[in-house]
Length: 65
Image (cartoon, rainbow, N blue to C red; front, side, top):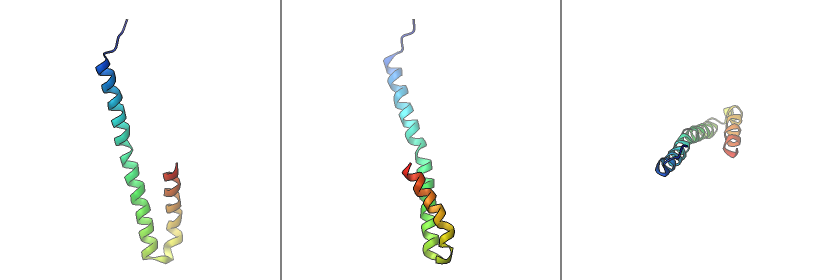
C-alpha cells in the first residue's frame, strides 16, 4: 500500500504551477515583439504596410486564442 506524503504532494502541485507559469512567458514576449515590430514597420514605411499586416493579424489571432 502506497501512501503519499502530503508535503511532497503539495510541493509537486506548486512546482507544476510554477513550471506552466514560467513556460508561458516566452511565447508572450515573442508575440509582443513580433506585433511591435510589425506596427513599427508599417509606421516607418507605409509602402510595405500590406506585407506586414498579415503578420500583425496572425499575432492578434494567436493572442485571442
